Amino acid sequence: MKYLGMICMLVLVVGCSAPKVIYDYDSKLDFSIYKSYNYYPEFESGLSELDTKRLLRQTDSILQSRGFKKVATPDFYINVMASAFESEQNSAVGVGVGGGGRSAGGGISIGLPVGSKLNQQLTFDFVDVRKDALFWQAIAEGYYKDEATPQEREAYFRMILLKVLEDYPPKK
Image (cartoon, rainbow, N blue to C red; front, side):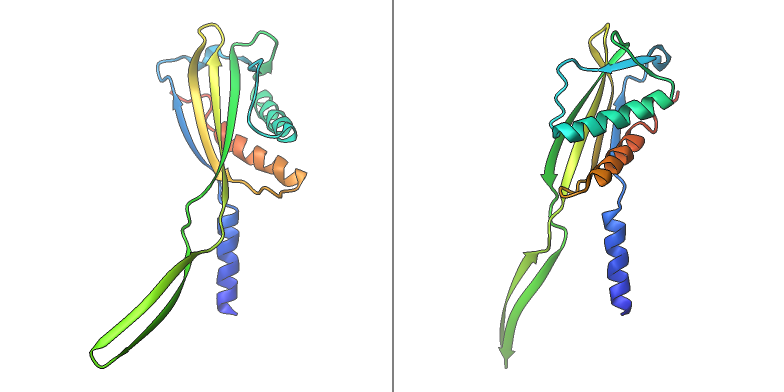
């Protein structure tokens, strides 16, 4: 019973792990000049149409709550690119056969991978409209549940975006 509780706790911790985010930006730039945004006119995220709508809805919600305005002629464009990949196997079950006697021995062992995880990488590019130059980028990686409900998908994108936009604009 003790082991069952530990296994359940491990599954809970691994299943609810927060996304990893890597940032890069132009450190010499004054970010206060960027007050309005919009999405690239040919926006293609690589997500399904419904997931793209969820992502954009959450992006708008977070940015507008921070005082940014979505306008037709913005200060910067946002582009998002998504890709999915299976993570490397970190766990395996070993099956072995062995035997020995006197001064001779032998054995065979096989490692079988246990489960696989579908991870998603979302790259967020903020591009200055006037200069046509990238000035801020975030790359987020997180566990993506392919069979998630619409509510779970909405919560997933909100969690990702809160983490991605946590330190935007960067503080000097």
